[in-house]
Length: 503
Ligand SMILES: *[C@@H]1O[C@H](CO)[C@@H](O)[C@H](O)[C@H]1NC(C)=O
Ligand SMILES: *[C@@H]1O[C@H](CO)[C@@H](O)[C@H](O)[C@H]1NC(C)=O
Ligand SMILES: *[C@@H]1O[C@H](CO)[C@@H](O)[C@H](O)[C@H]1NC(C)=O
Ligand SMILES: *[C@@H]1O[C@H](CO)[C@@H](O)[C@H](O)[C@H]1NC(C)=O
Ligand SMILES: *[C@@H]1O[C@H](CO)[C@@H](O)[C@H](O)[C@H]1NC(C)=O
Ligand SMILES: *[C@@H]1O[C@H](CO)[C@@H](O)[C@H](O)[C@H]1NC(C)=O
Image 1 (cartoon, rainbow, N blue to C red):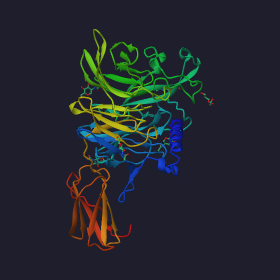
Image 2 (image 1 turned 30 degrees about the vertical axis):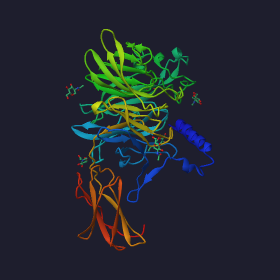
Image 3 (image 1 turned 180 degrees about the vertical axis):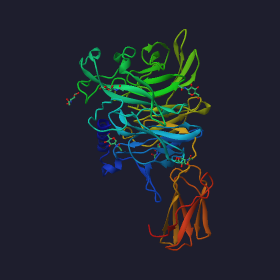
């Protein structure tokens, strides 16, 4: 991510320069963060506008603050309030999902490169405890990375973390390998980023399925790509990143695989044979109907599937770093006839007509209940929800374009059961009142907070966002209080005792 980060910082400085009359220091051009008294957590302010009813559930994403060089996994509620923030690092492919009938969070973390990475997948339960760490052994798989001779223990790429019903997970990986690039005007002894699909057992880390794009170049030709060579591919430090796989899902014994730079979806069977190829510009095995063209897509998933037809939803980014960003980014749903006419028909297309987005990279598009859908715009840090008629019902921004980003965002129901205690702070005011601050990182359903001093209840106040502020009279400096959660799964859980004091 280093080069794009520098690009983004340069862009942030350009914006700043344009505002030089108004802005005094570089810091003031940074997107505002929320900070709290009872917690050291700092999180992007989220500007939510609602125009209608949204579907239930929280927003799960991984804001990465480019100028501040920090990222976190987070959960927000629809009112723009933080519910949970995990520790800082490089995060991607965060996805809330079910595992053995329990809701869990899966995410990638590790070493980010230029549009790809090397790391591991962590799976947390609703107490935010790690229950699995999924790795792909770089050495056993013979992986070559651009960071060689850097020692890495796991070579899972940043793009996917999809659980199956069989105790396995689908991920992607990038291996640097030699390839003949003469078909795309490069050297015969060239180097590429081969993109692979892996299915890995969650408990043993055993590899259940492996598929390599380059290893199947007889079926998936390198000439499908739209990524310019631009002098890359000459050595192993600068391999040509031609496929860029970014989404995988298993249906039955087959895998739906999305290649961003080939503008293609491949449906691959368990023997690695490509059963069909949908190309977003040329159709591939299909006939593209009106308005069904797509390119540089993300997050392709079947909405429904039968022998005759699949319905596919995807985030149609339409832009990349090498195309510039002037094309409208939309979420689309396509009907694809697998037999007979092989026709592709547009079912729906969603975008925010009042504030259209032309995002440079990343994104996700999730089908929700009641015909709603949730779109995230990656390098443009905006989340949108549309209703069944395509009307926008929510717009949420949490950063400036290209300086804050999240690869994906999903809406999901969640009951957080933090293993920690609520955190409190009690500050005495000059006017003899005490202000109690209380928060509980990860708790989603606390209804109210009760402040106790000894056995006496001083006050019960309705919970108000991530941190609730409670004014109390009659306490003295050095009195000890505890704050107790009321309602929800953590009902009755109390903070450690805190002493009223100056703060
Ligand atoms: C929030 O976003 C709306 C547009 O969607 C804008 O009009 C408003 O100024 C923003 N508010 C803040 C505080 O940024
Ligand atoms: C995040 O990725 C960068 C490279 O872009 C790397 O320098 C850094 O060490 C990574 N951080 C962690 C916590 O792995
Ligand atoms: C989460 O996992 C931890 C560690 O295995 C366990 O102690 C805890 O009970 C689990 N929480 C839930 C809600 O399952
Ligand atoms: C996955 O599990 C289902 C039952 O949940 C079973 O029918 C199916 O054969 C399994 N698939 C694989 C590839 O193991
Ligand atoms: C990765 O690439 C190297 C050559 O650069 C090769 O030896 C190795 O087998 C590849 N690994 C996989 C899993 O394809
Ligand atoms: C690899 O190729 C790039 C050009 O694509 C060049 O800038 C770089 O110096 C080369 N590195 C090595 C180690 O030869």
